Image (cartoon, rainbow, N blue to C red; front, side):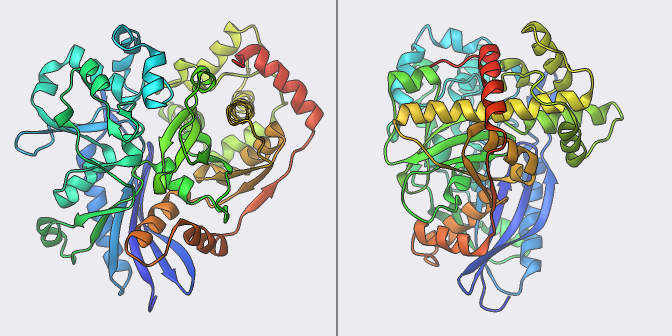
Length: 494
């Protein structure tokens, strides 16, 4: 490890978190996992919370283990997480309560109430963000309607990565990429019109800073408690999707299309400016801010959540399956028998995903899966069909065609899904790296610390360091025929 430049990456997803040391040496980068931990929300009195204190404990463990891993210094720390969720800080600087999970039911029917104040068309026009029940704007409005005393005792609203950065440094900022997931921003600022409608003071929201800003160092208390040296804390792209987008191994500055595969599948392209039109509004395409001020024009699709939650649900019933088991079941089943719409709202909450798949198929007059293998096949193919639908919608909005899809993230370990994506979309798929969010996080830190010149140089280093797999379309006529069946059942809006 002599001469390596090391940074510590925390990549927290909606089901697990990892601490990884990214090392830059001899023009290449590598990742070493030093700590992994589950991220399971907890239901208390009917509300689904994130276990924030446990997660912060695990972050501390990751810091300790990273420092023990290498004799070379840890130069910096960066944290990325899922979007939209937040914690509330009170007058005394303390966290008021555990952040509520976006899968909690508190936003049911809330958008309809909010639209009495600001229409969905106006909200999209201002924010460019896909209208979803889980958006921060609706979570806050729900809180104001149902638990106003909580908001009244708050002084700051911090999105999840900003909250962890605050707990590490005592510094309060709002990083640009995570702020852009909220549907509370217009342009590059918090929207006074939207916040007035939500009835939350603008002062609750911190100064927005660019992705890749060094915000401070580990606090004296943290260093003393963990017996570690001070190091920089950088506000990387706090939204894990934007960290993953930064690590797409496209070595030119041209527009490219990508899928970031995790609990959610984020399907989109990187552009210089937002795309906010009647067409993009009708199709529900979102504009989120990425690294370097780029805009990620994308669709949010429920992704590996289907498989993760199916596995978790079955385990509670004493039926233990690995992800490989479920993938092999899907491979073994007959193709194209039935489809679901992955965006259908009944699939958002935790619970009996196989039962909901069966109910969707029954309700839409389709063949109903008779066993777990058929259910998994339905899920896999429906995700692939949703990818094709999203590709067509983005190409229509942008007025251009993309010949290749880059797939990154943990979901690409599932080669079957990559194969189906290539076949459904009719595009060559380049898959890799698996740890895209972690790589993006670490590379952004190294740019902030002056160890890498810019994002193009970072992507070239990554491309030289990581191998990718290529997948080509198979059986195009069969997929075209099946896609017509899918669109007849699930609908395309264009």
